[in-house]
Image (cartoon, rainbow, N blue to C red):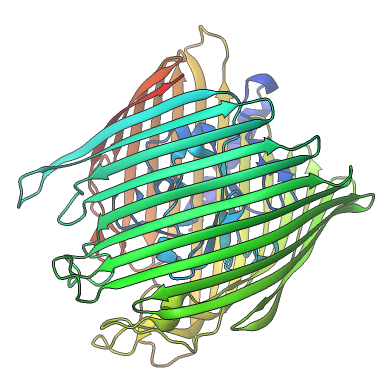
Amino acid sequence: MKKFAFTGIALLSLMASLQAQQPSKRDTINRLDEVMVKENRLQLPFSQQNRNIWILDQEKIKNLPIRSVAELLSFVTGVDVRQRGPGGAQADISLDGGTFDQSLVLINGVKVSDPQTGHNMMNLPITLNDIAHIEIIRGSASRIYGINALTGAINIVTRSVEKTSLSANVFAGSSFKKDEVSGDTYANYGLQVNGTHKGEKASHSLSLAQEAGNGYRYNTAFNNQKVFYQGKVELGAADGLDIMAGYIHNNFGANGFYSSPGDKESEETVKTLLASVAYTRKINAAWTLTPRISYRNNVDDYLYIKQNPDQFHNNHHTHVWDAELNNTIQTKIGTFGVGLETRRESINSTNLGKRDRTNTGLFGEFKFEPIDRLLINMGAYANYNSDYGWQAFPGIDAGYNFYGNWRVFANVGTGQRLPTYTDLYYKGPTNIGNDLLQPEKSVYAEGGLKYNSDRLVMNASYFVRRIDNFIDWVKAQQTDPWKPENFSEVNTKGLTLSADYSLKQQNASAVLSQLRVGAAYTYLDPSFKTTLAAAAFSRYALESLRNQLSGTVHADVYHTFGITLTARYNERINYKSYTVLDARLAYKQAKYSIYADGANLLNVQYIEAGAVPMPGSWFTLGVKVGL
């Protein structure tokens, strides 16, 4: 750990030195430090945040050799992406050593997490082209987003329409390996189309996507379709509507996904509908009011043996209604954020039965600057859950700009994660639910140092976190079924170092027209205090990452040729370490580009989840066209 830490600190120092030696050219620089972090009430630019927040901006997204949101998030240290299939067929996401149920995922502040199971969390209707940036908020964040933000939150912010346009992305790829049974070569293809219209009082964006492939090993073929709409309508000088709707149909072979080797012939179809309408009203110069309603419907149809659909066939329908009323009030002493939320979750399942629960919450936040350059945010979230009663989750953060672009920060937060319906009620031969489970609770404290400027963004931080009533699927003997229990207290210590350097040259004759270099390292040290003697075997507690190191280099040559190289090193607590190298080469013109991606260039064999081996080397050729 010390070797990585000293290397990271040396890197931060070197990049700060490079920044100090070069004059600022604000009009030619990608202003990562000015990205607005879009929380639902209080909003601040990235450079003024008092927490460890990672921003994946549009510039980085379009240059990385990726096809899905899950693959994109795998380049963020501290984010543990466990994929079970190519192209994001199914992926679990966790933050800083937590489990996949402990992180909250949102699109434009709208929660998309599923009460049935966290396995459906990343079934998202958006394409990479829809995204403006992604905010990864580390640490317990119930004060900001409410329940289930136990270890953090991932908020995907979609693009605003700037002009009328039409764009398309078509690609195909292969591992050039053959199915031993059929003799077919494993391959995939994708087509994405996006159209926007910018009017005088309204703007609209619509994207359509189709991606399919025959997999990369037996019974891993997949086929998914997506549609996503976003509209903004001005109703007056101070009024506006924001409309969002999306749908995804995702079908995939699930060989080894949940109960290997018995599920070799499994198949799953997940269909998700998401919609929201928000109305923004500026009551006066100081008070902005934003009511919003949202709805999420998810259908999860799982066939244990697709040739025999009646054997262990699970079909789950979930409905989530959410109504919010958010307020931002500017005063002479600071800014207040006040919010109300009510949420109803229901399920009709062949396995889990008919269930429902409600959650009603109240947000209160206050942002103020008691002295020059010292910013403090404080507040709490109080909620009533129909199954677990009243809970309260306070938090506070503070940051001080002490010298130029340097900022020292600290924060303390609390969080809660409700058991999913799968945790509570599942009935199966190898998994049995537990309806006596209690919610998980966390306390998180972090301190660190930031540097933000035109070209250079750096962060060094250290955190401690305690989770009480930690839920894991455990058993006393290998022959027993898995059963979730509040079986331990988990204490985690973590260190994060990151740096991102960007340089752009507008001069048409410049050989190196753009250079962007990024590196990040996360070290996690979890310890477990078991409160249940019978839990001899644990499914998730010992699978978190310990060391995670990533690096990315992107260069544009003569504004025409783009080169991206990436490396990711992962070491799990109970698994071998491995390094994955990816690359992209692109030829860019004003209205089109041609790109070639190479994923896992070293053909490393590794597992991210369960007993599912990840694909080896995969090569993709694509064309993007914009009008």
